Length: 275
Image 1 (cartoon, rainbow, N blue to C red):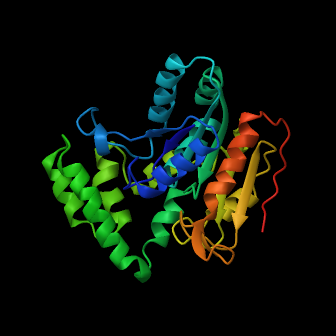
Image 2: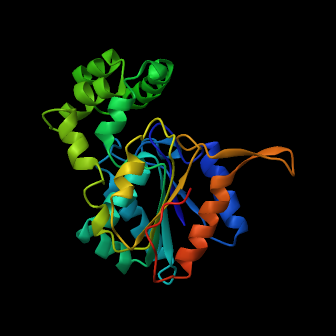
């Protein structure tokens, strides 16, 4: 299994480490991937990571496939990386390569399949502090990169994620505006093209990806299974266990079950969002 972290995170994020340990206890061999210049990968790649970097995940899988050519692989992406794995699974060119490398399944947790919708949602006042802290982390990331100083200065002026995408990311990628980036990077338009066993986990109350559930409801793809919980927020999925009197992350067990299904190559799936 290849686990991929979300935007502003790393492979050392407690949730990624926790899931890796849980899956390892299920007898899966688990690898955690850092995006470009993140965590222990600082200085080991050119450029920076963004929504177009899905092929990086494919290349990481290619390297793992060389090491273990007979293994069956499952990709698991969180948040924006969830969008990335869905995107590469839905684009025929990339999907064919995934299959050739033994990829038997894809899972996305709280995927942001419509980046524009997510960006607009984060304009709400409730995200004021989140935007401040999030952009502080992102600016710390790009500060050490070989990027035009005028773009770095523009990034520092951004107060919201949309402003960052509009003032820094779009120009850095040679795009006219943030919406052009959202249109190209979002996976929503390729979901019906996915031919690999895919399982998506989301919460109906996700404040960061509010449009994901509706989009997936409208997707008619027998290869795509959607698990929608009433509560869970964005990458949260915490509940209190009355039996043990402890909080637990129920996403771990659900993901483990999905990986067991995918590794067994179950051929038939139904598109049935759960309650």
